[in-house]
Image (cartoon, one colour):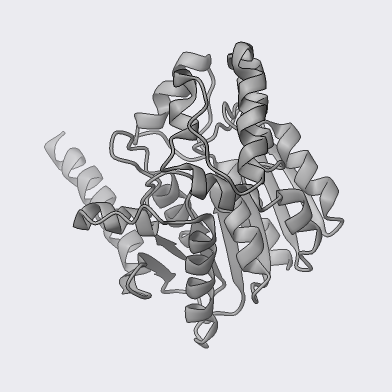
Length: 309
């Protein structure tokens, strides 16, 4: 029995080492704002590269925030690289600022686009990769759509909204707190005029905090359907049926706006890219459960798209 257990342990350990040896990991600083991790499959010459852009909030390269650890983007990167696609994932600039205790409150949505283009330009200057794809998750989808126009070979949207952020928030208010609908619409109309305001219900402070309003204005200036309609490269639009934040209808809007795009709806996949078999409670808890495996349907869909473009 001991001999058998030793054999099993040796086999598993060797398998893990082999997997590690098949992938090279490099920590890269693109510029003063961007640090990230590059994974390269060692058994592929001149591989394709996927640049992964994180969603809203202070989200790091692994898809985590301060109180939420699910490693969604880390698992996405590792899953793709295990299939022969190099990946680069990076911390949003606000993450680096938080770590240094020097947060710039003048940050704008355009800054995220600038960062994504900087990453694209950095790797485009290298001959190490066959084609470069941009994968944008949630808010990163809109960032990626705009950045991809600067020379990417393909674009992939994961749980990206099809409406502008003001329309998305209004829809959320209508469904969750309809008594604040008119106030929400009124404040957004003021922001569209380039003005700020303190005249809003206390309950809406998390959305319309005075310090956040300039950033919200800059985000509202970009309409996902308009932006993706001018994207000339092959695009894959992916959403899951268990996504609590972005419905599949949003993905359909993006797909409809670009005739060069392909729509993929993944059954039971949620917003952080893992399969959910149960109810909303299980779905919500998964945001802080790093042990969950990423959707293999997602990995295969992306690999198939890249292999055909």
